[in-house]
Image (tube, rainbow, N blue to C red):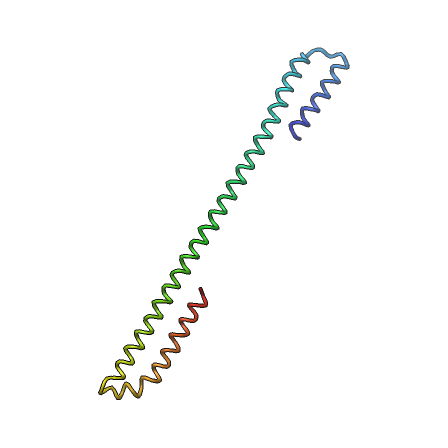
Length: 137
C-alpha cells in the first residue's frame, strides 16, 4: 500500500468517527499531522525518483567508461599487431638479402643447390604468416 492510499484510508476512517460524533481525539490536530505526512510522502517520492535517476546516470556513465576502455585496449592491440607485421616484413626482407648474398659468394655451391627450394619454402611460410597477421587486424 502506497503512503497516499494509507493517508486516504485513514482520512475516511476519521470522517466516519466524526460523523458518529466521536470526539475522543483532536481531529484538527490529527488532520494537521496527516497533511504534514502527505507533504513528506510527496517529497520522499520525489527524492526516490531523483535517487533512481542518479543511479541510472551513474550506471550509464560506468558502462560508457567500460566500453571506451575496451575500445582503447583493442586499438592498442591492433597497433601492436601492425608493428609486428612491419617488423616481420622487414625481417623477411633482411633474411632474403642475406641468403641471396650467401648464394652469390664463390664456394657456395652447396647453398646454390639447396637454397632455392629452402628459400621458396621460407618465403611461402613467411608470407602466409604475414597474411594471417594482416587479416587478423
